[in-house]
Length: 461
Image (tube, rainbow, N blue to C red; front, top):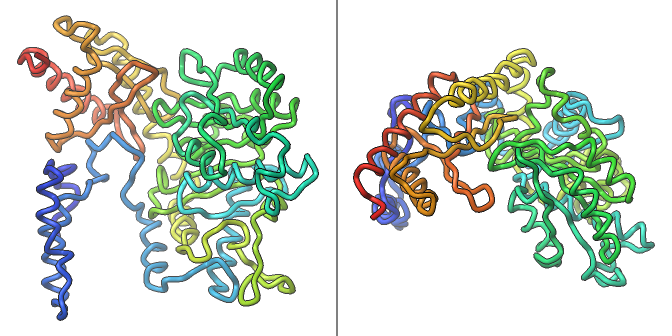
């Protein structure tokens, strides 16, 4: 098969073209085909349309190729195909997951007594966190949420979740999955660098408490659009003052708290009631590989469901499946364990530093670039910017940048993303893997070239 480093980022094919290429793969027949022919079909028809995350110009999303140590564990996990939710399904799998979680709690400097569970994704981790929060709220009001549900609350319509205006959309999913509506999720204003504005938050919280019942506040350590880190320490003080569950969505950014010089940016996570994290981002472990941590291990008791054939009451054996819903899930702990053991903490720190330092370097360089308007001061590995051109009126800038994004993506040599900060369209670099400022500047230069072509070619008119 073609070396992934020599491939373009993507084929650039249209959905219709991809469909035609893939259709023969699902032409299921009575007789099978040889392994050689099957591999050839996959190489010719599928691989060209997969994203090459390992390409140095891939700077658009939070995806990674497998890290070498993770690959060792992933291959073993695939070969043995272990379900790891219970001791009787996989003694080694269940125990390794438990030991891995304990080691991670220590590595992230979470409080003694903390615990965690592997999840399918950060979305599901956020959903479970909100379930734990509303269950905890019900306990404060004297009933069991698992038994009575929302009708146990006197006025369930007044239950409110607060989070940043830049929070991930999975929070809205989580609120809906609880049986609440979008109106039960309120967003907090952000400051100039897209972090929750603490002073405004304090006033908003006090005002809302006059008529509403806040049961969870969600901070983000590494927002999706800008990678900004909310002030978790100050938010935790507000949560303690009013008696509210604090969840931290650290799916993207939490990994950077492991680096000593960046640790202070994350102060307060140890006081959160729950924290989510996605090792499959920076660590390059197989998807899915997400974790939900809780500050008190007994909080997971709210998830426990017993049965006669598994998770029996009388047995005291490792049963990770008592802490999260899936009764069958992959051996996600193994690739993470082998990755950390293979690299060692020192190399992991180096791996995590690299994208942040590269982004910081080009941020400083671009301050004097007359064609670039910087839109955030990076705290992690994300830089948002606009390409400016005197020929493009302000009213058309959003459309202009969308075209620039489409032109860059279609080329297959560089991959950036497009998002909005409020009503303002921006282009976004996401450095998730080790990289260099020179590599990032090549992409910036390419983007500017495409932007000039669009502006000079009258493509907006």
